[in-house]
Length: 65
Ligand SMILES: [Zn+2]
Image 1 (cartoon, rainbow, N blue to C red):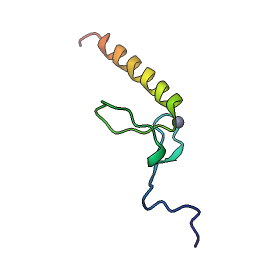
Image 2 (cartoon, rainbow, N blue to C red; image 1 turned 180 degrees about the vertical axis):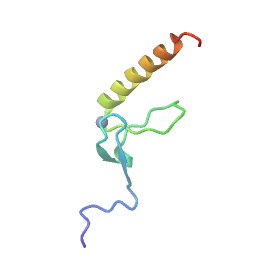
Image 3 (cartoon, rainbow, N blue to C red; image 1 turned 120 degrees about the vertical axis):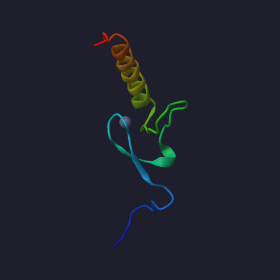
């Protein structure tokens, strides 16, 4: 059995936005977030940030039940 790349020191992670598999060492990890997420690039990070802001805005505008 051959492995094209040695991933023992370089585990793969999934991009939070597009689910692409990327080496953890190459993943973009945002600072100052409460959870651990990875991105394949700045573009997906940007999309994710916009989504988070939308979610927060929606939660803030929810009427109390
Ligand atoms: Zn991505």
